[in-house]
Image (cartoon, rainbow, N blue to C red; front, side, top):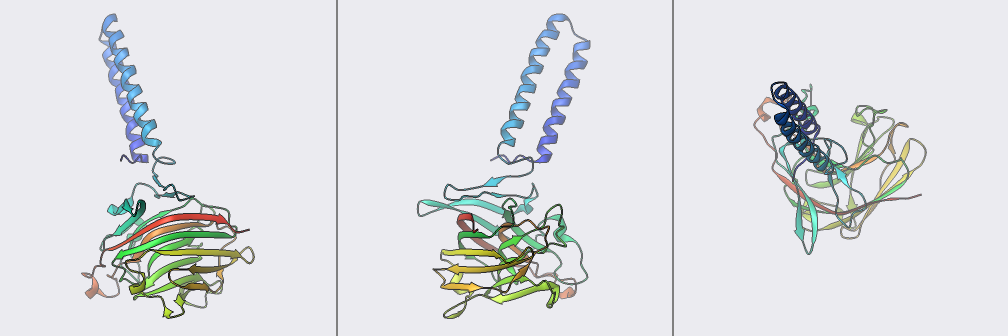
Length: 304
């Protein structure tokens, strides 16, 4: 499938300009009959370039984006632009239905910003993820199914995030108010503490059922339902709860904080830090194992 990007858009425009310049130069040197034939050829070429541009652009919402949506979803997922970090996103068939599968290989920075050198922490961040459009920060119910196929042995390896940054709130200011990730084999939720009582304002909570912490072993190889409910307590504080019948989860987490300028949207896929870190040179050859996850039945509802 062709992916229409901003680069493609500019190349097509440039190609059209080159055709016009070439034909105009030839017209100056030609007779009347030759001019007529060249004009016909020019009209045909321009129409083909215009058709290609319009067809390709229809694949996405705008240049640089591509959408993914199944018939049983009520919201599409989008790429950020055309970077997609050489990682695989594909539709796969299962039980007469189809799921969206994400594969993340280790050792590859996600986007350009993920490869910035820092004084501490991982050498870079790895990602293969898609996002919804931003929506008004009203109470929401988010439902989806997921199946972890392999991997998921990293640290802080997330598969679901709520973000809030936009043109009025930078990514540095507007931290994600909620995340779900695996850390050392245990499922955890992450909220953001307005008082910054913990490092970087993050609060980590182990996700539990009646048997104790939910583990990688329980998650791997089976489909699991998830229902995430958000309740806005005021303009800045949000309460998140997670339910899952298949996993026996019914848990509400500490209130999270979001800036007033924030606009929520979700990201699903895989996001994690690299194993290599600047602080420990001996770790430079360490690489995360490949992780694979599938999603289906994504729906977002108002919870007013």
